[in-house]
Length: 246
Image 1 (cartoon, rainbow, N blue to C red):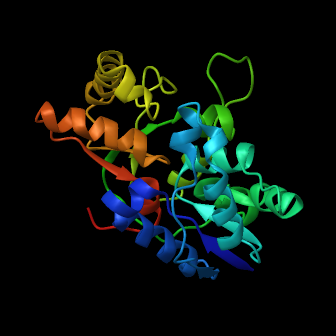
Image 2 (cartoon, rainbow, N blue to C red):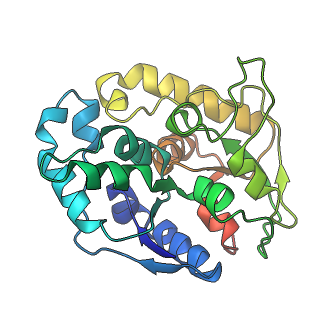
């Protein structure tokens, strides 16, 4: 199995340790991983701001970089959802369609493709799980609480394989954190209030760490936590699954 590692811009720039943890985790599971070094932005910020017609260069480069692999895996729900729903290339339409269909967020790749049911990692801490909107509602990584349907969580399923971890049950476990990409710039006040509410739920349950599949959401909450001088830290799920020493 040949897998390409797709690392979003903000992960590359601000949280490179998460990219490394993702690579190590996949390699430890026996996967042949390649990092296409010419990859750049997938085009999501432009598309979300109403400028999808200007993402042609991003699309063409993505298709060029990620062709020839069985799967493309990224430690991000929002960027993967963008690729799955919006990637297109006028010159290579079928190839673009194939790449979009074989692009996976990390936890869904581990549960749906690799069928991981054993992990050697340990994380002896109290952890709150943030369900990001793109992952939950777009990629169906977990069940939405407003539905009368069986509960499930792919990230939660994996975290429950980690030794010594204590996962807490939040009051509003699938509430938006308020980041929303460019929303947090255009609607700063609303975004911050939503983020404070989300952080408050975790603090109420005395978590040591907030984890999730999207660093964009975690970054937003980390900024609020830092301004509140809170001892709560953020950590991407890839780091926990890979056995990071906190």
